[in-house]
Length: 143
View 1: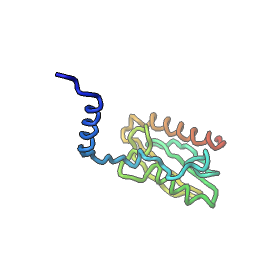
View 2: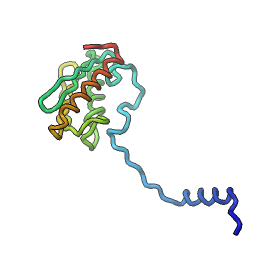
View 3: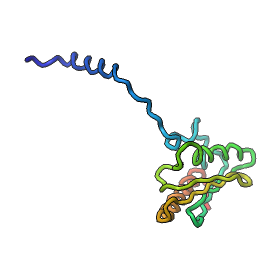
View 4: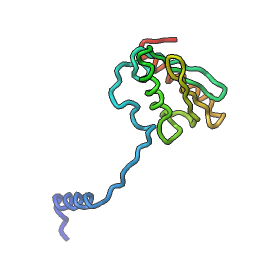
């Protein structure tokens, strides 16, 4: 038996792939980019003039975001989209499982993270602390 020419094999594969129904892939909201537009700055959540602070809490930690008065609404929306919006509870990549809440504060938003498993509290705190530091370093703010 003679081997099939490469063109015939390629054509057959393309026809086969064209006839196969490919299921739609649903990407969790947490895995999508937080922003629809490119970041406007290296500042926290891409909001110029914004600041972030990490705070340890009994259950885990909190990230407090503040912005100039004219940018507070934008900052709150971006914080919500970055950590709370969507159907899953893991809003941040590579964080231990946590219950996430948010509350508006004067000048911004506070996002709280409570470790689902108490044994993960220290790891959650360390990652949140590092996340805050990374966000601050891009904007020139230090605490």
